[in-house]
Length: 189
Picture 1 (tube, rainbow, N blue to C red):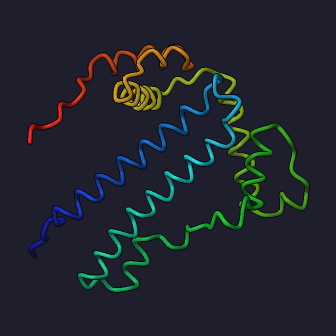
Picture 2 (picture 1 turned 90 degrees about the horizontal axis):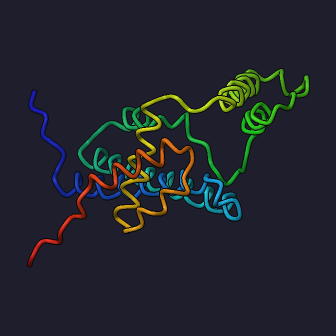
C-alpha cells in the first residue's frame, strides 16, 4: 500500500502553529517565575489557553484534511480522542478542585472522595506537592525548560533577562543555549 506524505502546505501550516503553541508554552513557564508575581495569574491563564487553542487548531487542521481525503467519521473521532475533550467555558470541575486541594494540602470531603476521578486527582496533587519540596532533578524537564527560555531570550535579544529565572541551574543552562544559538539571517530577496 502506498502512503503519500503530508502535503507541503499542510506540513508548513502545522509547523507554524506548533511553533506558535510552543512559544505560548514558554511564556507560561516564564510567568511562573518569582519576578512575575504581580501578573502570573492573568498571564499564565492567557498563555496556557493560547497554547491550548493553537494546538487545537493543529488538530482540527489535520482532521479537516483527513475528512477531505475520505477518512471515516468514526476513525477520525477515535483519532481526535473526543472523549477526552473538556470545555474551558464550563470552568474548573470537581476533579480540578480536588487536584488543587491535594496541591495545597487540603483534605477532600467524604462526599468528594466518593468520585474515583476526584480521589485520583487529589492523590496526584498530593504527590506533586511532595515532589515540589525537593529541587527539580529530572534532566529532561530542566533541559526542555532551559532550551525554551534560551531560545526566546536569544530571539528577543534579551539574554540578560535569564538572570532572573529560577532555579539557577536552569538560568545557567538557558544562557548556554542562548550563547550557542546564532540569530537567523533573513534571506536576501
